[in-house]
Structures are given as C-alpha cells and as structure tokens.
Image (cartoon, rainbow over all chains, first blue to last red; front, side, top):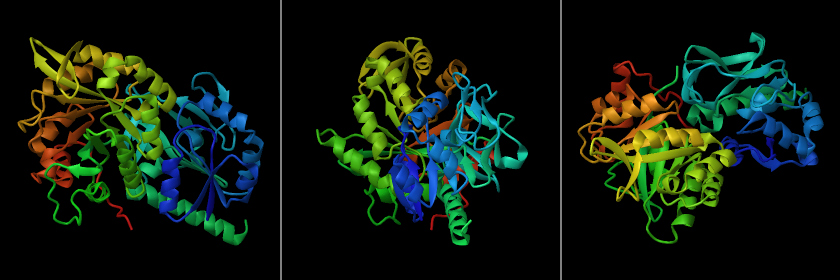
Length: 195
Length: 255
C-alpha cells in the first residue's frame, strides 16, 4: 500500500515514515498533487500550532485537493494533523480548519498542560500523547478516548473515510504500530472492494 | 489515566553503549539497537541516549545511532550531550530523535531554549538541570557538574519553563551514584514551582526509591541500577503499581 505523507513543513515526518515502513507501507513524503492523487491513502502529520499549520497547508495550495481526496480515499490525521480535520480551532486566534469532520478544537481545561505521556485508550492499552488542545465533537465520531485529570480526551475519531489519532501511534510502541496496521488493513479492504 | 514513566538512560561513546551492561540475552552488549529493543520489550516508556563521545566525529556517529534505533524502536527517544546549536537539534530530530536534552548550552544561551521551542515545539525540548545543595540552597551546575553557576534551581526551572522548555530532567549531584534514594526535597520544590513534567535522576538504588520520587514527579531516569542488573524496568513498574502509582504495562508484543 502506498501512503502519501503530506509535506507542509509542520513537524517531524520521518518518524511517521519509519513507522509506516515498519508495517509494510510504501511511503512518499510529498506536496505534489499528482503523487497525492496516485496514493492509496493519505496521512496528514503535524506538530505545532493550528493557525500556522493551516497557513502552511494553504501555502501548499493542497487544501481543495485534500478536501476532495477525503471523500475518495482514506485519510489519517495524526496529532495536530487530526485537529486540522475539524471545522475550527481557538488556538492562538480563531481559525477555520479543513472541516472534514464536524466539531471544533479547544484548549483543555486541565491545570497541568501539555497532556504529555502514556495514557490508556480502548482495551486499557497505553499510547503516547503530547498536546494541550483537544477536539469537541459528537460522540458518534469518537472511537476511543482517554481521561486526563478528569477531562475526556477524544483519542481516535472517525467519520467516513477520515480517521484521526490525537496521540502519536508512531511513538506508542508495539500497540501504536498495531493501530497503524489496523488502519492499513482497513484501507486495503477499502481499496479491494473499490469503494 | 496518565502513567508515570520509567526511562532508561544509556551512555553512548563512539557509537557504542558503554557502562557495565550485562544482558546475557543480547548478542552484542554494546549495540545501541539491541539494547534499545531489549528495554522497549521490557516496558521502558522512553529512552535517553547520552552522548559522552569526546572526539570531534561525535556528531555523525550519534546521528547514525539515533537513526538506527529509530527504525526499530517506536517509543520516544531523547538525545543529550554535546548539543551546540539549533542545527544540531534539527539534525538529531531528522535522524529520529523526538526530544533533545540541553544543559550547559541552555544556561549559557537561555534564548536558545526559546528559539528551539518556537522552531521545533516545546514538546521536544528537555532542559537538564544538575543541582547541588550547598550553602543553604540548590545551585545549578554546568559542564557535567564541574562548573557552579549563580543560578538557584527553582529560579532556573521557572525561567526555562517560561522560555518554552517542555520537560525538566533534574539530577541531584549530592545523590548521584550513591544509590541511597533521590533528593526528594528538590523534587518537591520544583514540583511546586513549575507545571511542566519533571523527570527525576540521580540516587535510585532500588524500586522503592523510584516509588518515593514518582509520588512527586512524572518520570524517573534510571541508569546504573538497570545496567548493573540490580533490578529491571518490569520489576520497578510492578513495585510502583503495587504502591498505587499508575504505570504502563506492555501487552502487545512486537512481531
């Protein structure tokens, strides 16, 4: 399976590349529309602040393509890349996002931020988080969540072909890789059935 | 619930892990990749590589080590030792490090903490503080504990947190190497002073010492008690867990 990792200058794409390679994906780090269209799936990485990330994406000219691709092939957003999938964020200044999933991004209420370290999701397995903002979205979109200082943190979200992971699966040990593998297998099923 | 972290620290010299490691099950006891895989499997939550190479070729050698480890081990990797510039940080992150640890450089150019945090994000900037208690206060030392500065630990910790450091790695020079327990007083003072995560280092002789530290701070850096096989990451975690500290246990195995 060929994954296009969107290169827009926000954070370290190489660890995502290494993790995808470890589970048997071919990876193209790119901002070339032709390469993105040719890929089986798209991964939107990202570390940093929401407004700068949207600006950087805007600068690549890829936003209309990503919006169209999200209805045609699987798209996975990781960390800030997941937050960008939503309609808006209040980080820094109110900024519109890609709007691929209904919901918004807000600063967490916890006294101690960032939420950094290993926290449990799903079957009580731990994954590695680093973030201070989280998404507020309908329960239907939330596949898994974590609890941080009494606050519920959506950890995996899904709507149609679009998936988001708030934590770093590429840094979450064998369990993190298994989550990426599950996504890969879902993409392959998708591709096989021609949906 | 957020877990406390256990972080093995490996000294690397000329691309090889050094210091009395006796894991019989490893084919090559100095191979950073083998050792990283061993610790990953035993439940290490992160790894710290400390470059103690003295030679001028250190830079490329360390980049090779980081890149080799990052291809096989998928937990956060921190690299410290000999970092001199934003370019050094950039190269390490590209090679596969998730965080860098700054010590002397941070004290001598505090502005660099800010610029590094702005450019790479606070999450990848760890500031290491070596502290020694003397004359009634905790003072910050640089150059591997050789040079005393005028900074007190609490003031410096507040400052680096404001400048954008993502975590603090605190080593008590009074306790380091003694294996008689952490300096809990400085951990408590720093915990009250800053909200960023604190990693305790220096003084652990057994798992109970780790429990004492983790009742106050977020993570414990362990070196000799692991390398000398006095205990294991798993054992430390079980003891912590028995003392009601939330710990992560690895249930998914690598293929």
